[in-house]
Image (cartoon, rainbow, N blue to C red; front, top):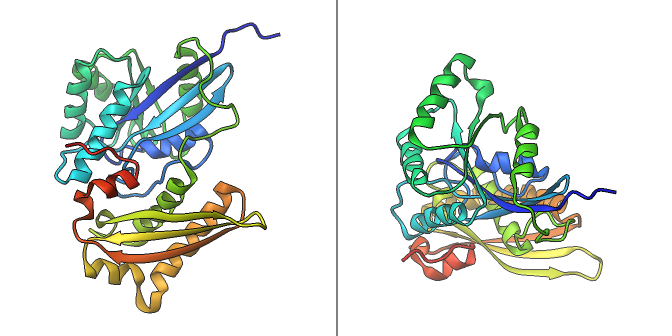
Length: 300
């Protein structure tokens, strides 16, 4: 009989855009919860991954990358990132070992330094960097922000992630689990559907198009046969972006829908009927209602 007390706590993953936060969350959770693309600033709001590790329920918080905001959308994203860290029992400062201490990393480290939070340093993508470069990088970061522990991982291939997860689970405070043990995220299915569509937009379009786009699930209807019908609207800022997204003869939006439908079917474990509509809506990224629809609070 295991008499060890249960543990539970929030663990925020913070860092600069493209540090690999969403890849690390998905790797640790063992499921695709946060969308991933090679482009920076893919994640827009807090995503919670729920996993069991021994007696611990680890509540992993993937946050948007922290950068210099310009639009209301940007400010809401950065606010969500800092809120995720402030509410956490433990903060993982994830740094791309290839990029090193960039200006963005320096800003994040300086703010964390005076936060009084428990902070662990996690160097990511270490498989792509000569080992001799890692020790000086660790020392440089240790001078910028006090950290309890340092771990070196590759979120992409999993190196070091299991050891990190074991240590995180053991470091959480004793207490009851906050979510049912069979849940893997608190993300509503409607929001998950919109995010999976948005991921395909990032993967299949380029330059400013994915950043000028948002996706909202208009309806999520359970059907008698156990399948689900999802109707989603893709909002774009300009007419040119709409034309690119639709593609010649509707080919691009059909491909986006087909790949998103396949991913959603796997995640929801049921057949998915996905219908996409593309609308031009100039200035959507400054609208309070659009921010709320994608899970963000108004920063102003």
